[in-house]
Amino acid sequence: MGKRLPFICLLLLSFMLCFGQKKKEYEQYMNTANELKFKDWKKAEANIHQARKSVTDNDLGDFYLEAAKIYSDVNYFDLALDYSNKAYHIFWGKDEVKTAKIDGVFAYTYSQLNDTRKAVTYYKKLLSFYQKQKQQTETIKALNNLGNAYLVLSKLDSSRYYFEEGLKSFETYHNPVLKAFVFSNFGKLNFLEGNRIKAEDYLLEANTILRKNTIEDHKSNYQVNYNLANFYIETQNPEKALLYAQNVGKYITSNGVNFDNTNYLRTLYRAYQLNKDYKHSVETFKKYDSIRELLNIEEKAVNVERLKVRHDYELQKRLDTIEQDKKNILYVVMAVILLLIVIISILLLINFRNKAEKLRLEKKLIENREKQLEIDNQMKEKMLVYKSMEQSKIEEIFKSLLEQVNVLKFKLKDSEISEVSRIINEIKLNTKNDSWGDFEYHFLNIHESFYENLDRRHPGLTNYDKRLAAMLKLKLSTKEISNLLNVTPKTIENSRTRLRKKMNLTNTKEDLAQYLNEL
Image (cartoon, rainbow, N blue to C red; front, side, top):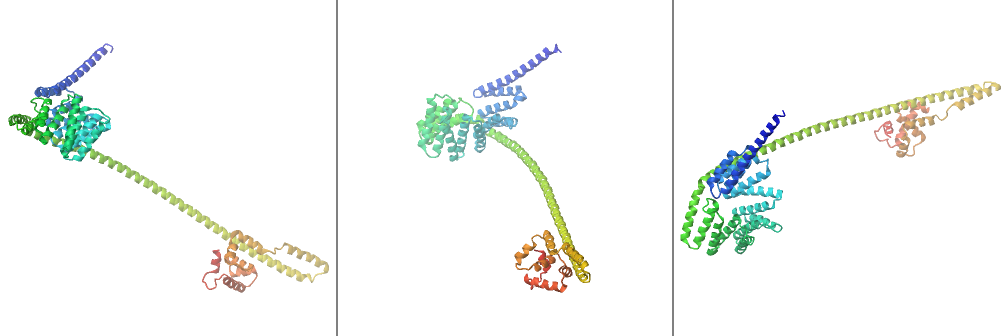
């Protein structure tokens, strides 16, 4: 194992060196292509092909992105779109920074192809990304590009909004190149709005910014001079139109086959026409026409349209997939929510049923207690009646005995009379004379508020009336009451009639006993 270790390390080192060399070789080819793209396109394209052969799968997305930029710069928009699509499939949803770079290529390509609405879509995505990343330079570029795009669409209010947002940034941010761009484009906007004086001021200010800061950047100088030349052509100022049109030529690749060159030659041709220099006008137009032919615009337009359709289809397909995934997630969430609702409903139903059952049992328990209490009261009432009747019978017996003893007393001798008198006195002492007191005591234990309610509703009743009412509440029959009161049943009937009259129940059908029972 010890002998094999150096060999394994050497193998790994060789692999890493080969991999690094291969990556370095791929980058060298792309760097060379970038340097040659405006000087010798054939060699530049050959380097792109060599880079494609040497690039690894891991770096394929970066290669597509760099190739798309190069093809876009040299106006091969069909190939730029093709490579952008390939890079998009690799980076979309995985790398926000590189996806933003691809959006930038799409935005520029579609703006050059006069598909401005689609360009606006990508510029807005870029603006949102750069604002989120707080990249001020790129944010201003995106605002400037959106302002330009809305100019093309003749939406001047929207264009002004984005240009003014860009201008605000220069209050705290210094970048003369970008400032010149924004001022120049703001000048174009003012011209389209009909304010020629302001338009000229902004256009000249943009040129002044570049000269004061000694800006040699070709792109910014090209754009500022191009806008000035076209402004003076439109305002019919021949000398200045030709001056700035010729200045544009200083910042392009001579005889370059690209749209910048065609735009320059077309502007120069119009400037010569305005100056009535028809000789140079014709020569310029011939150059313009020859470059147009070399660009092969018609054939490229067909390829671009085909790629646009394919890109739109693939993008829509991916968006549809995302939308479907969202819907599927929504369905799952809805199903889970529905399941939770069902479970909660079941639990609530069970809880409700348990509560209902508990209430039913409690109600039943209360009813049972009430029934038991009623039974107890009935038993107490029966015991009370039974004791009262027993007591009444005992009193009757004692009364009869006393009467008989008193009769016998007169038939006895004097010596025996004193003994009998003692026995009579003892019987009287042991006989309860207040049997009604006992009755009412036990009655009030069962119906404690009866007499109070009776007095409140019917004041002025006699004690006899109250006793009769109490016995009627106990549901005693006429015969039972007559036995207890030692009167005839007829007397009880008359007493009942008088009691009804006192209670104002004479002319009603209400039962007296039921009425008293509810007190």
